[in-house]
Image (cartoon, rainbow, N blue to C red; front, side, top):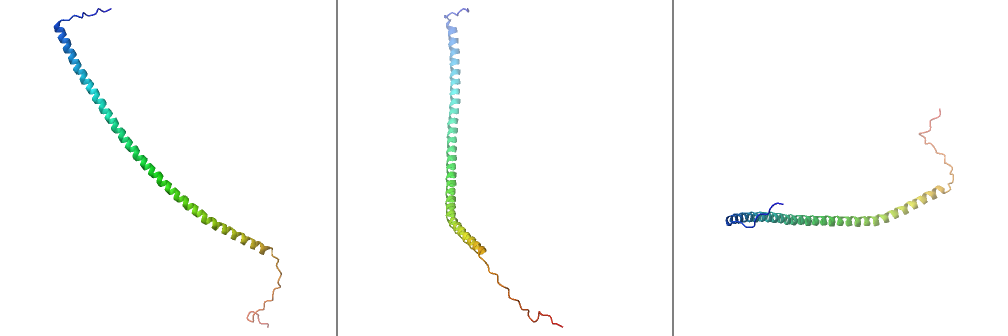
Length: 134
């Protein structure tokens, strides 16, 4: 084992040691202050970035909500127009189909109706069309 140094020092050595410790304390305080300033600067930058990010997120949410609201309104208007058209054209298609059925039944009725043969009348030729007999 290494031998421990004696605890008794001369007053000159003590003054030098105390002066060295005083210098070390000053450097230590400066280092601590620098670290504190660097940390505080980083913390302030973080808080500022956080506020900026939150503001951007809030603005984006507002835009997003606005887009969703506008799209929902457009969809509701389109649904309303579709429902009105469906109601209107549903009635028209019903009428159209009823008319088609009526026409189809009339055609079937006419096709199945008996017909009477009518003797054709002889057609008389006009004088101009008859060639002269010679």
